[in-house]
Amino acid sequence: MKVLMVNGSPRQNGNTARALKEVADALVQEGVESEVVWIGVKPVRGCVACGQCKQKNLGRCAFDDDIANRIAEKLADADGIVLGSPTYYGQPNGALLAVWQRVCFAAGVHVQGKPAACVAVCRRGGSSATFQTMNMPFEMLNCPLVTSQYWNIAFGRAEGECGADAEGMQTMRTMARNMAWLLKSLKTNPPPAREPWQMTNFIR
Image 1 (cartoon, rainbow, N blue to C red):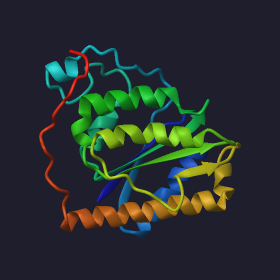
Image 2: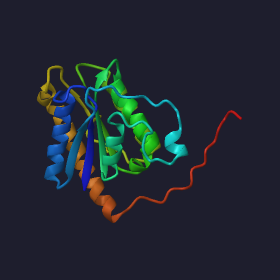
Image 3: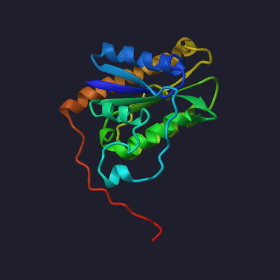
C-alpha cells in the first residue's frame, strides 16, 4: 500500500514538509509506503475550462508544462492521498489550488474513492478555512476522509518550527495510523457500489 502526499508549499523544507514527514514516519511504522511530491516554485496554470481533457478523454490535463500531470500519473498508483499546504490569507497556497483543481477535473478517476486527508499549517490563524477548502474536492470525489484527534493542523512560523507543536505532531501521527487502518480495512471490505450520477441543473 502506498500513500501519495503533495507538499503544496513553495518552501520545500518548511512547516508543511515537516508535518508531512511526521505523517510519513508514522505510516512506515504501520507498514505503509509513502511518497512526497513537491509542487515546486515554477509557474503553474489554472484551469482555463478548455474541456479538452474530457472531450478527448485524455485522463490528464491538456496542458503539460507544469507539475499537474506528474501528480496525476503518481496518483494512479496510490492507494491513499494526503494534501498539505501552508495558510495564505486563510486559504491554501494558490498554486496548489490551481494544480489540484486541474488534477481533480482531468484525472479525477485516480482520486475517486481513495482515502484522503488534508494537512494545514499556519503561523497563528486561518488554518481551519484552509483545511476545509482542501477537503471539499475529496468530498465531491467520494473519498473517505481520514480524521484524527483534531483537525489536521500544525502551528509554526520559522522553517520546521511546527515540529515543536506537540499536539500538532500527535495529530499527524494519529491521522497516519487512521489512514493505515482504513487502507488495510478496505482490502478486505471494499466500499459499496456507486449509483450512476444524476446531475440536476437548477437553471434550464
